[in-house]
Amino acid sequence: MRLVQVLIPEGTRESVVATLDEQGIDYAIFDEVGRGDFEAMVQFPVPPSGVEPILDELTVAGVQEDAYTIVLPTETVVSRRLSGLVERFPGLRISRDELYARAQDLAPANSTFFAFLLLSTVIATTGLLLDSAATIIGAMVVAPLMGPAVAASVGTILDDRDMTARGIRLQVTGLLAAIATAAVLGWLLQQTVLIAPGLDIRAVPQVAERTSPNFLSLFLALGSGIAGAISIMRGSGSTLVGVAIAVALVPPAATSGLGIAFGLPGVAIAGAVLVIVNLLAINLSALILFYLAGFKPLDAGKYEGIRSSVASRVVTIVVAITVLSLVLGTVTLTTYQTQAFERQTEALIEQEFEAADVEGVVLVGVSVDYQPVDRLLGDEPVVDVLVGIPRDLEAPPDLAQRFDDQLTERLGQDVIVRVGFIEAQVSDGEPPSSPLGDRSATTTRPSVVRLPTH
View 1 (cartoon, rainbow, N blue to C red):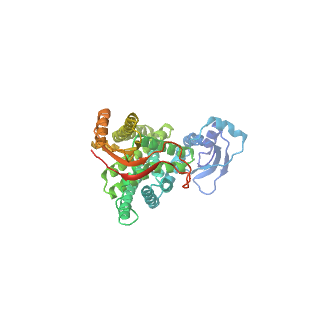
View 2 (view 1 turned 30 degrees about the horizontal axis):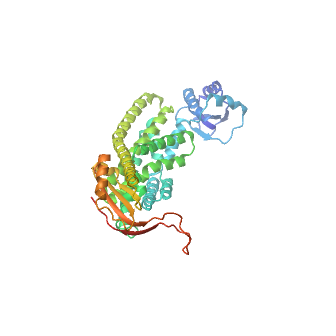
View 3 (view 1 turned 90 degrees about the horizontal axis):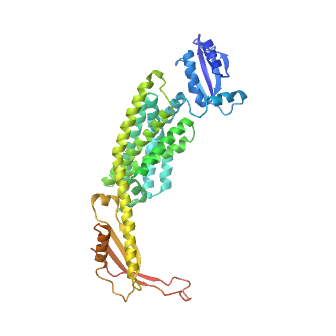
C-alpha cells in the first residue's frame, strides 16, 4: 500500500476533490499555509498499481508537474474501506514516478560506482586465479552493475535521454575499466612469487569456464535482466538480483583482462565476447519487460515516439546478439563434438581391451586432450592410454599405432596416440592376513617401461 500526499494548487481544490470522489478514494485534506501557490494538501492511501492512474486523473484535474507529490510506502493500513480499491487495482506494479526514482537511486555517483566496481574486479580476478567460486561470488556482492543496467532501460521507456545515456556510459566504461584493472593486476602478480612462472590460466577451471562461452551463458544474462526488472517493479530482492547481474559481467571481464596480461589473445577475446553478449542480453530483457509492463513516458504525448524508439533499439540489440551468438553457437557445437569424441574414444579403447582379454593386462586409464579451440584450429586430438602389464609379459611395440589406426578408422579423424606401460601385479582372490594389516593385494610400481608415440 502507498500513502500519496499532493499539494493542491490555488483554484483547483474543487476539481481535485471531485476527482477523488469519483475514483472512490478516501482522503484527508489539510489547509496549506506555508506558501501562497498552494491552498491545501490532500493525502490518501492507494494500492501500488493504483498510484499511476490516480495521479494521471489528478493531473487532468489541475495538479501539474510543478506541484509537490510524495509517494510513501506504508507498513500497514487498517481500514475495511480499502477492499474495493484493492480489487480495483490488483497487482504490485509501481508507478512510473516510483520507477524513475528507484532507477536514479540505483545508479550511484561516478566515484562510488567505479570504486566498488574496481574493488569487485580485484576480488574476482583473485578468485579466478585461486579457482575459488566462493571468492568470485563474494566479489559479485560488491559490484554495482545493476543500477546502470536498469537505468538505461528505464530512461529509454520514460524518454529520459540523460538517464539512458548515463546508464549506457557507466556500463561500457565500467566494464572497460574492469578489463583494464584485471590486466594490470594480472601483470603485476606475474612479477611476484604469488603466481607460478609457468602458470597456464587456461587450465584453471574457473577461467576455462569463461573461455568457452555457450548458449547457457546467454540464458544466465537474460534471466538476470528479467529478474532485475521484476525486482525494481516489485521492490524486492534487488540486492540478490544485482549479484546475479554481476556474475554475468564481472568474471568474464576479469577473464578477458587476465588473457591480456598473460598474452593469450584467445582468452581475452572469448572473455570479451561473453561480456558483450551478456551486457546486451541483460539490457534487452529489462527493456522488453518494462515496456510490456505498460510503463509510459512522464509526458504522455511522447508515447508514440517511445514505441518506435524501443522497437528500433530492441531490433538493434537482437541483431548484435544474433551476430555474437554465432560465436556462442560455434563454441557450443564444438564443445559437444569434443566431449562426444572423448566418450567414443574411451568406449572404443575399453572394448579393445575387453575383446583381447589378455591375462594380467589391465587398462589403467584413458585421457583425451581435445579442446573446442583444437577442433576450430584443426589440431589433432591426443589420446593417452595407460596400461598395466605383468613384468614377465613383453609389451607390444606397435600398440600405439594399432590404436591410432583403429580410432582413425572408427571415428573418421586423425589422432595422436601415446601408450604408457606400468608393471602391475593383480591378485587372484582375497589376500591372506599379514603383519602389514588389511591392505589391497594389487601392487603397482610406477616404472614406465616405454612410451611409444605416433
